[in-house]
Length: 203
Ligand code: ZN
Image (cartoon, rainbow, N blue to C red; front, side, top):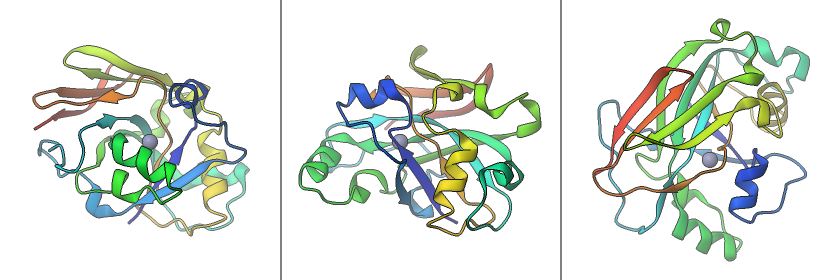
């Protein structure tokens, strides 16, 4: 399976990193080896001094598809999750400056937290899901899918023009504002509404 990630999907996050607002979704991928193993702590890699959390709504693909029309995109998933797209920001800034790919900064081992899954049917619409990340008990990011530049069904349609979506693939839909660094002994907890979706210790 693959992880397909969307960058710059919330205006306030684009502003905080002083990025340009993209004309199309920014898309990158991470391998399955980047998924943090269940019950394992996140270990800050030695090649970075500035690893950031990015909490994101996840969508799990349930059937094979290519060139998916936006109006049928909702039939390709019925589970919604929450995760973290850990990013070695110092390395990423360096790579971005040189116009090089971001993989080393985002696709390293453990860089992708995939929390638990909730049935889509639990939500009246996937376009108004509230979520948040707490660091050591303090809310550091809170978002709502209503504020996405490209909504979930548009993202599925868009990325499927380039990549065949397969059963079990996961889409990371982008992070809202509030990204920041992690330090050893931090505790990160993610919530959709009041449901805890993951709890991670940083080592
Ligand atoms: Zn991200």
